[in-house]
Length: 81
Image (cartoon, rainbow, N blue to C red; front, side, top):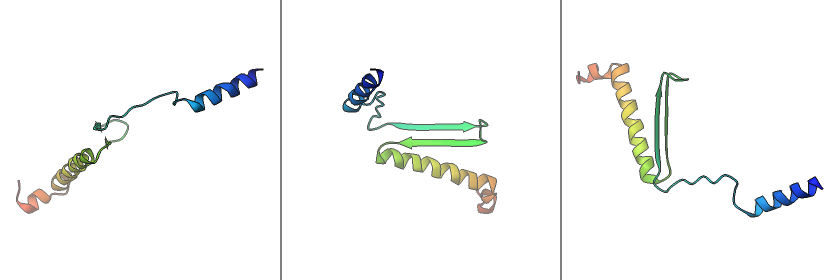
């Protein structure tokens, strides 16, 4: 008897929507910067549309450009000091 009710519930769930509905809007954008957390530096950038991905890419490009200039001494070589 219990097996039949479980199968009926599974069939009902497969015919309907998912039990947990997660909606992501079309223009959602997420930027998380964690310093000295579990990792030394963790950056998580996510986006759902193309323009958001361009923004995320430009943020990463700026971050790594500043890291190159400061950490490896390229600012002194280029005379930007």
